[in-house]
Length: 157
Image (cartoon, rainbow, N blue to C red):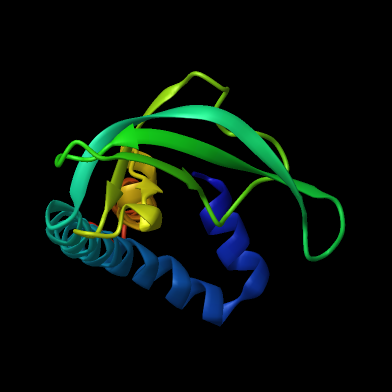
């Protein structure tokens, strides 16, 4: 962390203000991002709990032409709805490499009465944005406290 004072001296007065204010503002920005992550996670949970859920089997990865050229693989899922109906769905979005192997069991969710709109509902897919906000918020919070503890300006001295 000795690089921050060296960096500050090389830039002059604006960097001294940066050295003084970064330790004060980064923990607050980190907490703000953590609070936003909690709000987005709660919103994702609220939306996800209103959907019907089942465990589907990936029967195959269907190859399709990508709009920009190349090939994308879209998983074909087979599952049974709570009413006992068998459903088979090819997901509309795909990837350039198959994400799941054929025969893999995955959680799916869909709106009531519309099993053709099923999506794979892994924890990462449901809470992706909240997870990224939490990671960035934690890094900013920790970095701010490290700078605050190492800086003579940030620790209130």
